Length: 78
Image 1 (tube, rainbow, N blue to C red):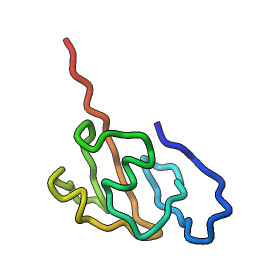
Image 2 (tube, rainbow, N blue to C red; image 1 turned 60 degrees about the horizontal axis):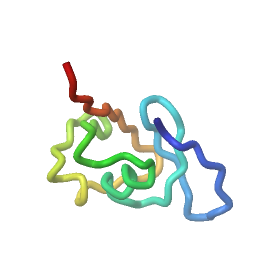
Image 3 (cartoon, rainbow, N blue to C red; image 1 turned 45 degrees about the vertical axis):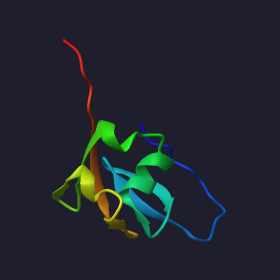
């Protein structure tokens, strides 16, 4: 689900998403992180450092090095 990139970009730092270290250009918003991971922000539920985040906050909530995310993809069906 996540892209673990090895980057030569000096601005790339690590956040932990679902227990895996992920390099990202930080600081960035949760929305920017999700899009970089090829996830549609409206199709996931996110917990940031143990706190549930409303989708309306994805564009304002900033990620920093060392932050922890739990991301659950919403799947519809029966």
